[in-house]
Amino acid sequence: MPEISFFEEDISYKLKNKKQVRQWIKDTIVAEGFKLGELSYIFCSDAYLLQINRQYLDHDTYTDIITFDNSETKGIITSDIFISIERIRENAAKFNQSVVDELHRVLIHGVLHLVGYKDKTPEDNKTMTQKEDEYLGKRNF
Image 1 (cartoon, rainbow, N blue to C red):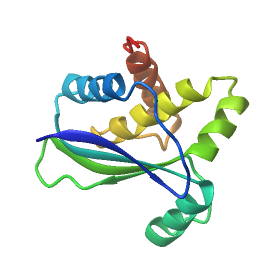
Image 2 (image 1 turned 180 degrees about the vertical axis):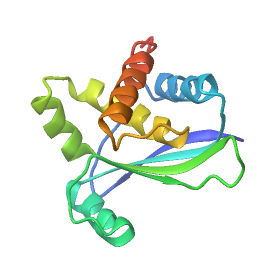
Image 3 (image 1 turned 135 degrees about the vertical axis):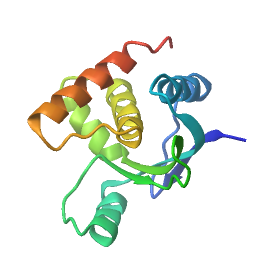
Image 4 (image 1 turned 45 degrees about the vertical axis):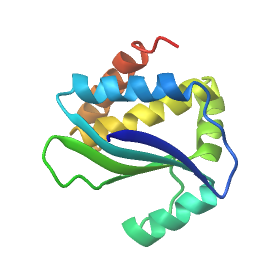
């Protein structure tokens, strides 16, 4: 059964509106022409995500999200997405956003990577931000 799961590592964080968030993420995946396999979000600390960044990506920097695409079948999304709640809180303050809005942006950012959007060039980053805004606007909770 396809599902979206939420876990915590190294922190305590409870996502509000889990049922609605799951449906919103699934609707986004379907709207982009994909099917949901299994998607795991792991909320963690900066230190935990920094360790993953060093170990798997050879990057020695803090980040808000790391997405591992575990898909084995084309068109079916299967992934582990790690999100630093500390970084989300800091970025929310920096960008004058609520923590919930910033978290939702990052949740959907990971999904958009999985369906093929990039963010390394200014043009790609602009497209990514437009898609994030589009799907954030479709939340009904």
